[in-house]
Length: 622
Image 1 (cartoon, rainbow, N blue to C red):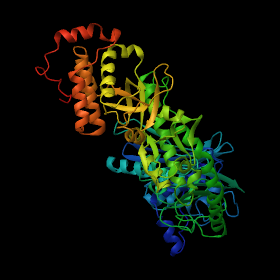
Image 2: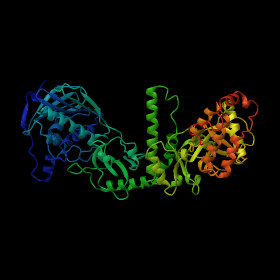
Image 3: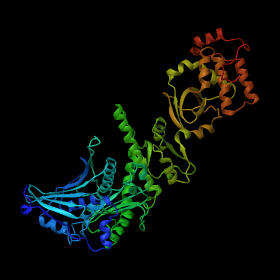
Image 4: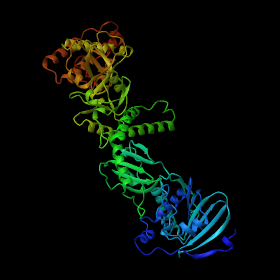
């Protein structure tokens, strides 16, 4: 290595500017670790495509280096703009960020013992060593291909101080450089702690934490705008570095992706509830480098943000909400659940879809992006006429009819969908509350509390109970409560605890029938034992289950007691006439017809106790 002019130049640094406010700002940056932003900025201004920041322990010291692949510096660049305070090589160049020529001095804000600058271009390298006493050495570092610059700060730190230094360096890069237009990588190596070196990519796309956002690029200025409402449904917990971005409102201003100013506290007129970021080469920082200048470029950008909120952002939300509603309604398929890991991922994806819809829904119900409630689509538990989502729910639930909801699709919602009854899918904890907020006057009711699905047992399943069904039918007829027929069924949804229900009888019977009914209508006809109705015994009812077991021994007694129990359930305490007629049936039972009598009737005749000697099975009325 040949020193410049064959000797090392060792001289004092140029004198500091006279005392005053500018000198104070140079010595006391608002954030001492903003020196990293200044070095990144210098690299970007030099045309760097990649910048590597490294924080590591050395024997007895700590080194913090920033290396870029920019154009490097010549000797005149070092001795002129770099070492002369307040002389900037970027004056008048609108493509460069720095303006005041004080940025490099920021490296002394954290009080390093020494700062080394290595730079190379045009086949020549130079090494500059700056000391804390303001002296420096400049030497010829010999030939070197390519171009770039490395700035290294050397400090004596305890291991605890190094850990804190590394944390603050990471936080500063995330705060000031996370949207930089070039690649920035941070590596931290604690050799003394024997921990593995970490590597983190700092630069991220310009974006806002919002359920939906719009991006507009106009005359080299980039706008990203979104609502804050609903974003908490999809956000990850905010870290200390980006807590401001998750505020009720947020504004960020950047030049080439480097942060000039961010706030969640300063409210701009007409932008409450909005999170936005604007990046423009027209923005300039203040002398203190911790704010953006409030000039024409600043106020024009705010005016454009307001226009984007009123127009494109609301339109984007209105366009994406139906897609999000339909996506939230898509159930996890059997294929997605085939393997455990695939099933877990499918469940996560379904949860993410539901959360994304809930976030957009809340944004659609909140100013300044609120939409007309009748234009807001809601996901359906089961598709109605092929639609996975529907808007205009108020028209679908006229008058006092409730809005029906369900946490998932099932046989009941499928049957209701076939009948043209939409059920809102509420597979996210916030959906019900948001639905009520959308329709504050509407009554919201779970579908399983308002409707029931009735499945008649197939003929083959009813054969074993033919005698019991015959006795029940004849007992009701003799008691003047005759019905068209008696059958067995399963009930899903409302009224599933009842022993039996009455439904209009079919004109022509085919296979097992399946239908859904409003619970209020079933309850209304509960006591109407008429020839036009069919009686369906609920196989899941304890009363019916006991009667079926008893009928294997004594179908006559079991059927008569079950008939009495069903009348009590439907009408309450029996009047004397009903009671007398049922007792008469028990005393003089009609003969069982044909095969229904069979072996069971014979078994019943042989094993039934004498009248008055036995007791009805527990659970049936005496």
